[in-house]
Image (tube, rainbow over all chains, first blue to last red; front, side, top):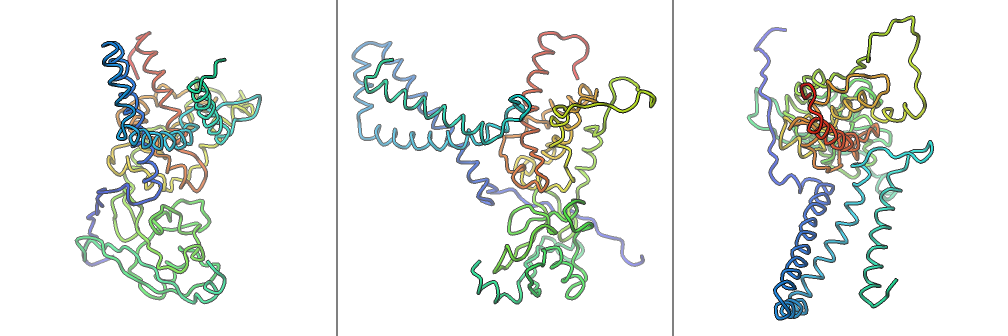
Length: 136
Length: 255
């Protein structure tokens, strides 16, 4: 080969707003973002415990605050976020675990995911039943 | 795609992100119209461009049957092998082709993968016997269970699609990344291998498994169903156990 030497000037593309590039990345960002809803609800409950410790007056204020329209809207939003988080987190869960063998057969990823969903559904139903007055 | 529209497709437009470092400071899109047929792969369409329309277009290819791992590129924004992707799936077009994301573009659709090649050496992707074994000792024996522990991770063809699917690698090119970590795990999980302690340094490092945030797209785009996300995340458990072991019984130098 003759002529000018080959030019090597690698071009680096930017990563700005990378999560908008692919629907998969958007779903991933929703999975991660809805983890904040779990944190938010933990804070709501922690605040309730602090109010309980402060005495009956504070506890009543917390209960009243829970019944406010803003609180109901927040709870609806947090519930939706929790449902999405439960769905997406159990979808990735099989990837975070070692291989599980039942006898000689490897447990399928879909089975692990469905077990997670089932556990979440049973826990939710049990909690609703307890709230409705059912006692085991 | 409805049948009449498919039958009507006589040609299809390729939009290719071109970068010729001696001409352009930054990549530019260029369109080519190629004749369409049902059995035309993206790779064949590119070969048509190179042979008939523009000999200056650069891309890598070799086997054209999804085993050499050379022709990975972004096809309509998704990392895929050009030989394994058919234009009939992408009608009516235009089909946008770009060099694999997250890698430096060397020229047109060709990336600079030297970081990956350097990483290959670092992870020691070969069997390191526990002790020297004479040929006379015969073959190793493995149970089907022992085979299953590493077999899924042994199908990697180094096509780098998983890297183009990994935003953590895009944000930090120092990350060892899904492909190499899956290959590392393939040897660590092999009952014939004794090199685990030598490889754990790469697993435990800042740029090892802990740079992974379990996006999971690497496993989705892998053309060989290697499931790198599973390999990487299993090693978070191994890395944590390794850490605790050294914390509780700090005998010898940590790996």
